Every structure is written in C-alpha cells, then in structure tokens.
Length: 560
Image 1 (spheres, helix red, strand yellow):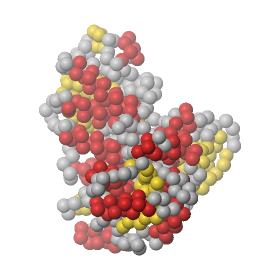
Image 2 (cartoon, rainbow, N blue to C red; image 1 turned 180 degrees about the vertical axis):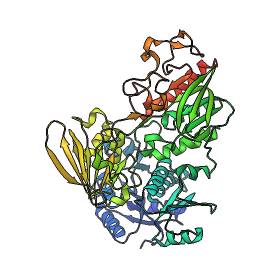
Image 3 (cartoon, rainbow, N blue to C red; image 1 turned 135 degrees about the vertical axis):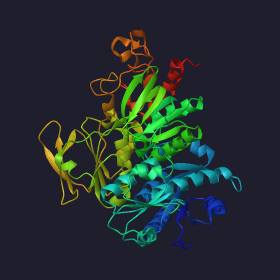
Image 4 (cartoon, rainbow, N blue to C red; image 1 turned 60 degrees about the vertical axis):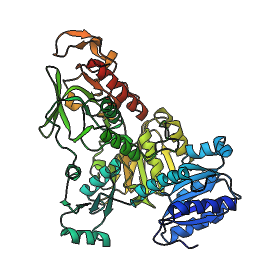
C-alpha cells in the first residue's frame, strides 16, 4: 500500500504476520481516518520502508516492532529507525511474559531506543490499546508541530530574537501553537488576513482572529485571561515560582481548601519543562516529556482553583501577620503564608564572544524548539546535569554530531545513571570532560566553538551551528537580599541551617521557636525545591518539597 501524502504513517514490523496484520486492523479501527498503515515482517524491509518514506518527505508518527525480528532485535531496529525519523514514537511489541521479564525491553527503554511498549494479545476494539496509542500520537503531534488544534499562529523570522523568545516559552509551556515564516504560503495568507506587512514581525494571530503585533509573552497569555496582577484581597497562601516545587505546593494548598495564588515570571514548568523525556518519575513507566508533565500539572492547579499571575517578584516584607510579595509592575500579593519556589537560572559562560552570539546560534537553556533545525549540523551542549544530558540526547536525533562539554571528571557525579548510559550508547555524541568553552566565532552566526582543558592550556576548535548552555545554577533570590537568610551562593537557608536555628515571632520580635524544616528566617515563609540551600536539585525532591511545605504552612496557620 502506498502511503497517502496527506496522512502520517504508522509502520508495524513483526515476524508473526498474524500479529502485524492484526495490529494494523485494530489501529485502523481507531485511527484509520487520519493515518496510513504499513506492515512488514523483517527489520531490513522495515528500514527500507522508512528510508523510502524519508526520501519523499512522508511523516512517520509511530514505528512499532516486535522484540525479536528475524534479522535483528526489535531494539536494534528501533535504534536505527530513530536515525531516519527522530520525531517518530518508537514502540516495542510483545506478550506479557516477554515484556515483564525481558532485559532487552529494560535496556531499550533505558537507552532511549524505545519510547513505550504495547502488549499482545489485545481484545477486539481494545479501548486500553487505543488510549495508549492515542497518547503517543498526541506526543508526536506536539513535537512535530502538527497539533490538531492550536490556540495561536505565529508568523516571524525563525532566528529573530522576539520570535525565538516566543517559540521557546511556548514550547516549554506546552502551549499549542504553530510557527510559520512570512515567506511560506501559510505565513503570507495569515499576514494577508491579519492586514499586516512583514516590517513588524512577529505577528501572532489568536484562535478568535485577534491580532497581536510584536507582542511580549505576557501580552499573549493575557489575551487568554491570565492575570498580570494579584487580587487585592488577601490570600491564605502565595506561591512564588511555577516549577515542580511551586506547582506541587499550589496543588496541595488549593486541594486543602486554602485560597492560593501562584506567581510565575515567565511560564509554568521551570527547567523541568525543557526536558525532552523524563523517565524516572514515579507513575510514568513509559516516560513523559517535561512540557506534557507540566501542562498536566498546570491543568491540575486550575481545576483546584489556584489563581495564576504572570509577574516577577521583586520584594517581600512582613506587615503584622501578613506577608506581602511585591511585583515589578507595582502590584502586590498579600498572604498569610508564602512559599518561595523560584528555582535556579542557568549560569552564564561569561565569554564575550559567546554572549555576542546569543540568539544567533547560542542559547541558554531549552533545545526543544531548535533541534529540528539542526539536521545535518554540529551542536554543542555545555553542562553535566540531567537537563544537559536530556538535551544532548534529544539533539542527537537531529544533529549530525553533538559534543557534550563538562568541567568535571565524570558525568556520573551529577547526572542520573540511566542518562549517562544512554549518552554512551549514542554514536553521534562525544563527551568532552575537563573542558570549558573559551571562545566562539562566526560571521553573524555561530560557526565554531573553542574548548580549553581545565588542567592545562590545551585548546581545540570544533564546528558548531548551535551552542546550548545548561550549566550550574544561579538561584533567583537577589530580590530577597537582606530579607531572608541565604548562603554564600544565594540559596535560601531553612530549618536547622538558619543562624541560631530559631525563628522570630510574626511581628519580627525576639526568637520564640525552632523553625520548621522548610521555614526560612521569616516566619510563615517557606522555601521549596532548587532554591533551598541543600536541595539535591532533582525534580522528584522539588515535588516532595512542595507537598511538605504546605503541610508546614498548615501548622503555621494553626490548621490540622
């Protein structure tokens, strides 16, 4: 069967013809209107199909393979499939005994060769099977820019600074959007309908036809009803920061019936929202992208009635028994208790030549929106944490070669073991330890990066169309200087780490008690997640901190 040029393809490869054709028939029952289906019995035949589809530009949404094929293992086949169609979701297929006891499945998932698995046999019109496949197809549509419904259309130049900013924030927030250039047929038509020229880009067209010219992200989300100022009436809890810790705190507070506001300066998700795949979070055995995880958390806080405010906190003060969070726009949130969960920002390299090329091949943070544009190019990632590792893995599916640069002796010092192993398994990723970036060059855009050894003057220059910096962590606490006790790195001290280990009373008087474990030097103000001194900087810990902080807020408020 020749693939329909208008429909993405689902490719099934299994040695048993009854399984291959049976699965195709079952999937056609649920998804036949929107997808084309191809089945074959061998890995080599499957690779030929994928090569042919790639050569003619046909999109592939899913590649499903049995654990053991006649000419190679299923995981090996899926690994090769990734090189041909990096955005396609890759799924292993097998019986219950095969999958539950298979070391091959465990290794394939660990090394990122497979995104998920399906179990045989299935019932006719199996809704469980259909739901799992629908979720995978939804992920693929998100990543490939083929969402069935989008809230905004953006028209702009791909490398222009404001366009980059809007795309990056939209990607991290999981905001359904489509980006087109003014030269494309779709872009020209959108500009015509909006009555706009190409002299003031980007142009954002909302789902209801409203047009925004060169908007900020705040102006975009404000058009959807997101508040830019807190309610003047007092809250019971104000959460500052919308990463995992802040979202966890907000959900727990609101679910306990506490009137809660969450203040976030940019977008929900924090650094976790940039993760291409989170594989070690409890309850998600198939893994989940950071933006989908954070989108679900965002849905949760809205369902519990958390008020969300887009704004940057610039001050904190105690007024009697109230805590007041001051915002840059001049507004303020008044609450009985505050949870600070502002996380950390990526550190800057401080190399003038690198800073001069920010937005022109140099990026601090997310790789999600830029990865597809790097096909056939060389990319460099700087960092040794999980975000850097996940970024390198994601880029490896697109770029010709990825160099991961780290100052340390070993990635294992700061990166999860499963990520270290996955990076080692990728042929097009090179890890450069005990190195740092000292220079960058390019005619208006990044072309080369120079690395230097940390223990000598040895240097080498490598080609690079893009440099992604994900180093260290700088806590966002400058606005709390002189207000809360911090350590030398700017992280907020809590509990027993506070000087004297005692907390003043609500009016700033003499110390009256030992502070709670997440309580800061100001009573009723708590720190959660990466911003807290001593935090292990893991998403799971941040989520736990958010939960614990609200239990302690309850104690502070005298609620049980």
